[in-house]
Image (tube, rainbow, N blue to C red; front, side, top):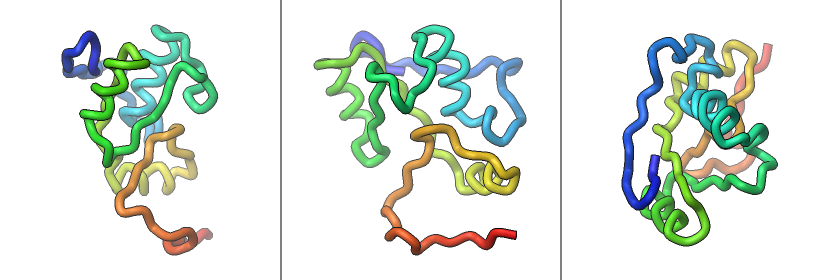
Amino acid sequence: MYLNEKWYSLKAKQEIINKDSVDGLDASILQNHILSPVLNIQDSRTDNRIDFVGGIRGLNELERRCKSDYKIAFALYPVSINDLLNVSDHDKVMPPKSTWFEPKLRSGLLVRLLD
């Protein structure tokens, strides 16, 4: 978390870490325990108080935005391929804006067999 020109490391308490394939993801923990209850951001896809920065722009972009328009920034670890497959294997959907892959694959290049 970046606030007042300083980085802080946040670690979820053990009792809120969920074994569910979606609820256990960093993006879900952030949404369910900070964005929604503390900042009153219920839908991160449509709320104009939140914006997303893709992985390749890095922490410097988050700092730059906090020095101009924004007050706080959160940087999350990338979702692992295992996490992504686990969500898919449980027929669930990834949280909004939780996936960022580089290099970007061409549309239709990645296909998964559906039963």
